[in-house]
Image (cartoon, rainbow, N blue to C red; front, side, top):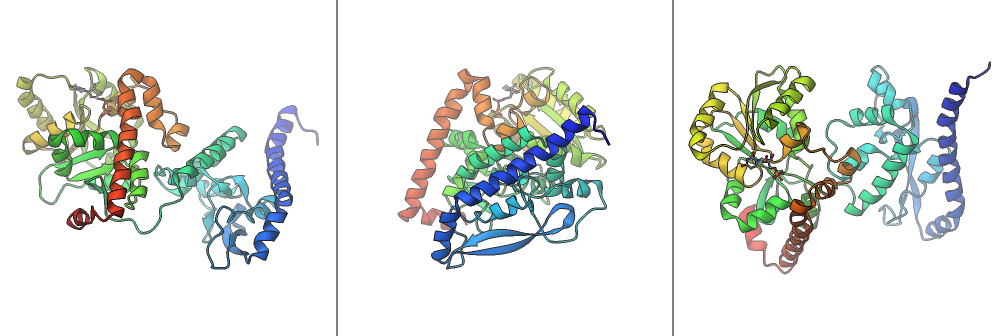
Length: 430
Ligand code: UDP
């Protein structure tokens, strides 16, 4: 049988990177043999964990444990070079799965099982930076469908960089995380959406606020804003800064729940639910463009109405009347912080929607006015660097000064706690 040039290229593309990956693992195994021998003499031993391999075959993932039964620091994944060399695992692939029924009946299941699991994966990378929304299977299937040598190199590089933020979430997650005096509802993206679409038991409007590093800094200067945050029914932790702070302050954050990622998921959720959104804010025309985008991408999701965010105080009552008349169940307010949170708090009693969310500059992204950072930057928790690059004149103070200020506040808080100064406050908080 003769292969065409096209088929030949496909075969080469499929086999050469795999061969290089396995060869590299074998070479590393050889080069590091003296270290392995040294660790073995110090009592380290290999443990094998059963995992689901390609097409559901059983593979034994190897990990190095020390005499005390803990994974060997830095070198715990060392013996996985054997898994890599024999082809049970590959450098980058779908995340390794626990042994269980292998789903080869669904298309997605077959796609995921068609390649060996990887030491590095999009799922683990996103978990590390708190942006693993959706299920592991969905993310793995998306990876397999779009994989390429270049994409794999990117995942590998980003995983190495993201490891600087620390490992996976440690210990049990608390329902509330306390960051610099702000109590945060430690929800996953899915749980946050559940809460937003469910009317509150008290029957009044549920105010939802996203809290990022800039918001925390702002709350130090603006007491009315801090009060609006504290009085919100839900405060959601937005961005990598809060995750890092949570780690430093032993108050781990479950997931990066930000408005921009939440919006399409919320649209998907309200399809066929009878609920609808009102989009308030942005320059004239922006909210309309977002509505057009939403209808095109989520045809069943109902947008009850839109209004821009540049109205005079004497137009406010008519605007609220219009929002109420629209019958919207969820109101998105995009005036930027702190204006939107204060506005929602002040008008909560007059609004008939069951939830109102302060969503900042979100409309500008979905209207296509400001491009959003590419996925690879978001996966690294570095979306803010893109915003800084887009509008350096406006953003340098927020990010360059703000991030340093925030980190110094977090470190001071930690030092205080270590000295026992903050313990009384902690007891009050919990
Ligand atoms: N905005 C508004 N009315 C105002 C001031 C601002 O609707 O009186 C809008 C503005 O057009 C922009 C958003 O509020 O779309 C603020 O975006 P920014 O990026 O400052 O908010 P962030 O996400 O940083 O809180």
